[in-house]
Every structure is written in C-alpha cells, then in structure tokens.
Amino acid sequence: MQKMKVYLDNGATTRCDEKVIERMKKIYLKNYGNPSSLHSLGRDAKKEVDRARKEFANYLKISEEEIIFVASGSEADNLAIKGLSLAYPEKKHIITSKIEHPAILRTCEDLERNGYEITYLDVNKEGLIDIKKLKELLRTDTLVVSIMHANNEIGTINDIESISKICREKNVFFHTDAVQSLGKVKLNLGNIDLASFSAHKIHGPKGVGALYIKKGIRLKSIIKGGGQERGLRAGTENVPGIVGFAEALTSLSEKEIERITELRDYFIERVMKEIKEVHLNGPLKERLCNNASISFHYVEGEGLLYHLDAKGIAVSTGSACSSKSLQVSHVLRAIGLKHEIAHGTIRFTFSKYNTKKEIDYVIDSLKEIVTNLRKMSPLYPEEK
Image (tube, rainbow, N blue to C red; front, top):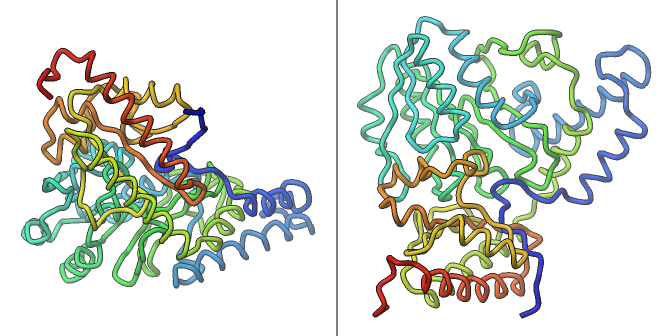
C-alpha cells in the first residue's frame, strides 16, 4: 500500500483556500494601511474592513453593526460572557453545559471564583442537554445561557432555536459558540443574542474570529486601548485576516457540504462494518457533516494516532484545544463513555479537499493498525 498524505483533522484547523490567500495578498501588498489612519492608505484599508463586514452580514442575514471582529473564536467566547457580566453586574447566575469548549468552561470557572453561580447542565449519551430541565433552571438573576451549536469533539448539533426561544421568553440572554457549525449547519440568528465564529475552521486564516451581538445588547470591552470595533475590541484591526474570513465565508458551497457528508457516511459505514468492537460517539444523524468520533475498543488512542501519523494520516484524539492532555476528554466523560473505551477514541474530521481514494486508504490503514495493536494488548480477549 503506497503511502499517502491525508489530513483528517479539519476540526482543529483547515487548509486555507487559495482564493482567500489571493485576496489577503492584495491587502498585504497594496491596501496595507491602518484603518484608523486618515490618509488614503488608511481609508482604503477601512473600506476593505467595511466591505468584509458587509459580506459577513449578508451571509448571516444580519446588520453590519452587529458583527465585531476579534482575534479568535476563544476571544469571541470570552467577550460574550465577560462582556455581559461587566455590562449587567446585577445578574450573577450563568447556565452552560458540561461539554462546552474550554473557552466557555474556563471563563465560567473564572467568574465562579469571583462570586458568580454557574450551573453546568448534564448531557445525554448523544451529547444533548435536557431542554425541559434548562427551562426549570432559569431564574430572575440568570444573566446568560451559553450552549454550543455543534460540539467540537463528537459533532452533536444542539437545537439552539428551541433553546433560544425559551431564553427569550424568560428575558435571559442566549449565547452560542458556532465556531464548528458555521458554514456546515443552517444558522438562524433571529432569537440568538450572541454567537461566536472563527475563520480557520472554514478554510480561512488563523488569528481572526467574530462575535455577533444582537442590536440593543450592551457589552463592555475586556481589552482596553483604542476605540476600534465600536469600542468593544481595542487594537489595530487584522485587515488581511478579516478580509480572508469574509472570502472564506462567501466561498462556502452547499454542494461541498453534501459531498463531505457522503464521504463521512461512507467512512462511518465501512469502519463500523469492517472493524470489530468500535463505537460511534454522538448521534448518527444530528451531527456535523464532517465529524466522525469513533472509539476503538482495546486500543490506546495515542498509539493509534501515532501509527496513523506514520502512514501520513493526520487525525486527533479529541479537541485540539485540550488534546495535549492524556486525561480522558471532558466531553467523553460527560456522555458516560467508559474510561477504557474513551481512551481509544479518535476524531476524524473531513473537508472539501478530501477524496474517496484518501478515505479508502485511511480505512485500510486503520484495519491493519487496529489489528496489530490489539494483538499486543493484554486486555484483548484471544477468542476475538
């Protein structure tokens, strides 16, 4: 079997689209001024930011003043939660789930140390919260509910439309981390108050994110300095990154999503059929089109990852934001996966650049590696 290079870690980051690079190159070489400067180069740079903001707003069907550009999805999460807490200090209760991104969980823990009460919702085995339970937990002093649109590890898609309506009925702000779902799942921001996004998950550049803030909602900045981004995000705008983000967003294609979904389904079907003792984490249908989180029994995930890497295949044992730790993922613990099974989990995430030939190569490699690793495992029953 001839060695191939296959990238299946698109949940961590994606290859930058060539059209994005070309548009950014123009900014680096031609319109490189500071948008705050009054001269022509500065004005041209500001026009580029304004144009990108308009493209972003048109895609999401919102107004331009409702988008703030930041440096990452994590910063957007921080600004949403901390910005609200600073603007509405009288409300000291926050609700989130146990499987949120670390940017939300660490922010909530920080606020908890400063007198806030945080309710961490349990999830079922598919990674979904109990919406009825959420409704019961809402209080008059609840500031915000933050539930991610789609989970970064197991791909579960939450019913954020229903969640946001419940929050609106109780006059509670609703924030969603939509970093993984942007461009993959239809997003109606009608009842959503705040939403976080990141460029590098959709073939855009690293180092740029965005926060949607519904008109009329007050936030206070968490980075002090100049008055950029309506005074909510100090610091010179990353013009090439912002422009690249808009280009990546407007380049998204429904046909590509359909093809990625077909590749994912083909991969899952073959793995489940051809490799014994495997488990798909998360729901079969209500999941991200590019996500397949699979646990291989009697195999260590790190060992499997390194053997796949030796064959040119890039995957992840979980979230790129927490996979450096050898601890079992907080997401897999929350869905009730047994410790020994959770340790054998690999996240495969696909993109528009993947091919069926690559997927066949990955499956053949998996079959060989899993068989060999199980032969060496003292836990693997011989009769299997």
